[in-house]
Length: 229
Image 1 (tube, helix red, strand yellow):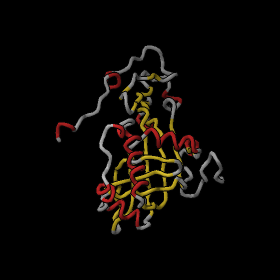
Image 2 (image 1 turned 60 degrees about the vertical axis):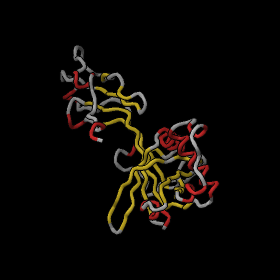
Image 3 (image 1 turned 45 degrees about the vertical axis):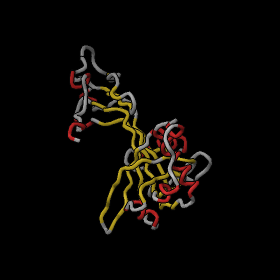
Image 4 (image 1 turned 120 degrees about the vertical axis):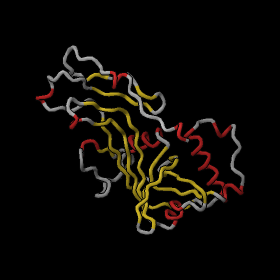
């Protein structure tokens, strides 16, 4: 598939093979995922050791930008021309099936492959750093102090072209085996929202009558590690 105004070229490295129908290669889907999320994970190899680093980013046009201190090992590796893999995932819901084998998640994700390019111009750096702040907290740049020239020089910024990229999306209810469909077991989707948190459980459309939402679903919560720090 060749790249045109609305699609990214599909390469052997970006073609989704497992559940291929969930693969998305259109720019609208990829941009929407990148613009909603703000935390990515970047994988690179340092002295033969694979490392994955979580970091903030922003998208400007057909590039995503990463930043960090000039001593940052990841950014040093990227600026040296080493290949990287950047992933972004938005988790939209837990899919609870009638069997544990078919439990799943609804999600939107994208994978970007390539090599980075250093941004060295101070004004371009400033624009990118403002873009990252604005991407995470819209309106913050107008109030907070912007970087000084010394701070800009102490910051590395790299750009990654959106060239080899694909998205993968799962939506909808559980996919159960036919013999399990009449089981008196609650099935459905527990929605997640990045801002609002856990939503109201959505029963499976084929749920048999009389099966109530269990408390471990209706009162779902995750353990917090905040008190440790």
